[in-house]
Length: 99
Image (tube, rainbow, N blue to C red):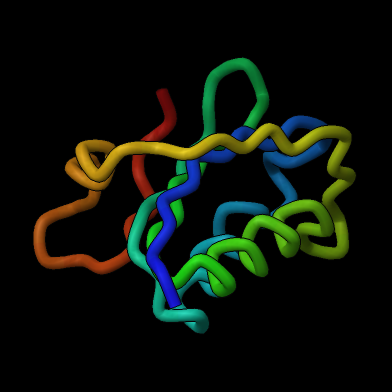
């Protein structure tokens, strides 16, 4: 099993519906590293690092989101390990402030 790092941007009705909490819970349950945050344009951005199949399952979960969300688009791309530097010190997965 090889590792993967994916950077995703989710658009739709994804703020104010528990989307970040959903991503945080799902990522921690899968033991992934990374982070999630809201963006001022109304999207949610996240980074997932871990075994490739587990990261792929997490990206698939993002396409569904929590019950109240309406996901219109999920853009994802390969990312470098330097993006993990945004995690909060001592945390495996972080909920970051809105940018």
